Structures are given as C-alpha cells and as structure tokens.
Length: 426
Image 1: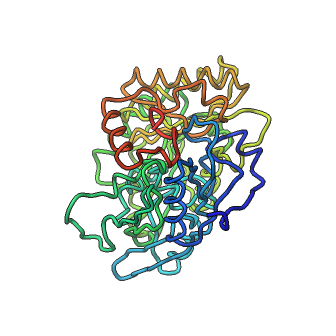
Image 2: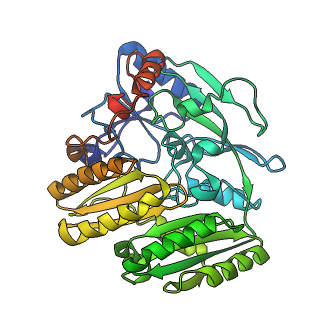
C-alpha cells in the first residue's frame, strides 16, 4: 500500500471541508483498490473515498481519516456497445469526457449533474445525482445496469450485467447507488444510453409573484397534455437576475425531440401560456446549461470570503412554489442571498444560501424545518466542515434508518469506508 501513497497538497481543502486527508492513495487498477481495502480493513485504518473531489462538503462529520483513496486514476471507457446502447466506464471518468466520447456516436448518458467538467461518473452514481432533466430522464439509479464493487474486506463482486434486459435476481445496483461510498468502492459502471436529441430548445416564461397561481395552473395543464418537456424548472428572481438579468420568476421548459415535435410544443406553450407571462425561446441550449450548472458552489471552486451552503430539498411537486417564495422573503429579511431553482415535475429543489457563517447556518436549519412542514426534507450538499457539525446535514432520520445501519454493519463492520459520511453517522 505504501508504494501508492502520495502526500498531496490538500491540507487547506481538508481543513475547510473535511472528508479527505492529505495522505492520498492513487490506485490505477481494480486489484490495487482491493489490496488497499484489504490491508486497511485488516489494520483497522479508516479510508475516505474521493474521485473528482467536488463533494467534499457533502455529508460527513468525522474530523479525520487515516488515508484518502482517490479514484482519479481509474479513468476511461472499458467497453462501448453502440448497437445495444450501453457503455462500461471506470469511476474516475468525468461526465464531460464521457459525454464527449458518446457524442461521437450520437449517444448520451441522460444525466445532467452540476460541474460536468469536474464531476465523475463514480461520484454521480455514489450520490445518485441528477439535474433539471430528471423530469424526463430520471436520476443515476435509473440508468445503471451493472457495476463492479470492491467490498471493505477486498472482495470483488459484480452486480447486474452489461445488457439492458437483465431481470434475474435481486437488483443489487440500487444498494450502492446513493450510498456515498459507505458500503463498497465502485470500480466499474455499466450504463444504458439514449440517442442524442435531433433538436432542442429552451422556452422561458417570466412572471411577477402575483402571477404565480396562473403559472401553477399552466404547469398542471402541461402535465395533463401530450407535450413532453425534459425539464420544468422554476427559478427564483435572485437567480433569474444572474441568468436573465430580470428580477422575476422564470419557468425553464426544456424540449428535446425531432425539430417538428419541438416546434409543435413551442407553439402549444405560446398558445396556452398565462397572459401575464413573457415568453422567450433559447436555441443555444448547451451554452445555457453550462452556465446554469456551473453556478452551484462545490468544494473545488468555493474559496470566496462569503460562506455558501447548498441544499437539496424534496417536497411534493407544487410545494416548490411556497418554498421559493419563502426563499425570496429570506432574501429581503434574513441577511443572506438565496439562489433557488426547483423541479416542478419531480419536487427536488437546489437552494444556495450565501452570507455570514452564522446566518447561513441559521437559515439552512430554518429551510430544513420549512420543507419538513410541507411534507418534504432538506439535506446539506455543500458546506464547510465546522458549520456542518452545527446542523443535521441529512435532516431528520426516517424509519428506514435501522435497516440502513444494519446493512452498513453487515458489509463494513469495522467502518473502514467513509465513516460518518452518511445518514445518522453511518
């Protein structure tokens, strides 16, 4: 194990966000990963698992680890079967590189997490990440059909398979997706793909707050219609000023299909939209999504004087309206700046709270309580380590926690992997 150890210049990063140590191991093969885990588990050493390093501020209340196991050198395409529309890839491959490779074959992984240039497919799967296009395409768990996993004791297993129609046995993939690297180390991922859309556009509808009820009725009308938007993302006025230079609510309606179908849907929206709504059509969709996805702070770009926290809030679909309105009230009264966008069709919101540390902690806690009162939850996806210790970063524990804890104890009884990174200190 010592021959893979590099003393990295990460002291500042480790002190600010945690979930990493400057003593870094860089395996280049699955066998080296297995060897590291076997030796660490036997010696009672604690490992922090990282890949692109964008999620160091996500979960985790353990002050230090013995070593960091980085998957940064486990990169590349293992196998691409264009006819079957599947790809097998190593976990350290960035989303950007993966999508660029697939683009040559007019295919894509239909996932749109933030920071695709730095986020890796391993990190996206481990956190079950998604973006606004989750409305049509789903999250990471909906596209993984197989994986190779190294257990904490060094044993290597394979889950699922490399074909889309694989229905034999338990779906073990789901056990590791979203587990934040606490149950095993992913060394290979097989994903099902989709064709690149022939045409895409983004329709924006902007309204003042007093027209939100009409916008809500229009969204219900969309959901009852035959049109199939890729996203229905509601954006608060503060974020709208960054994206559109307008102090209004915006609804982002993304469309992807053949050109005739996209134009038909644009016309339908124009004909049925609320009378108060101003409509605009963006054809340069790739540029917009790049700008949109780079706005969210992460542990690789957040070194500003102002403290920023990022929340993932889940509520029933239409409860995103009062949530974003409450964020706007806090913008006026809470001594913080809040940028917020919410998926009306799936109920997941991203809320960025920036300001003095004590104010950020106060209002994150408040938003967690507000979301729970509205039938949802709020978790902290990004925040400096010292501030995370002041919060329940995963919100309230649910009834399923005892089952999750039992699985962790069965697969990792010595807490070798990402100790205290997940819900309830798992």
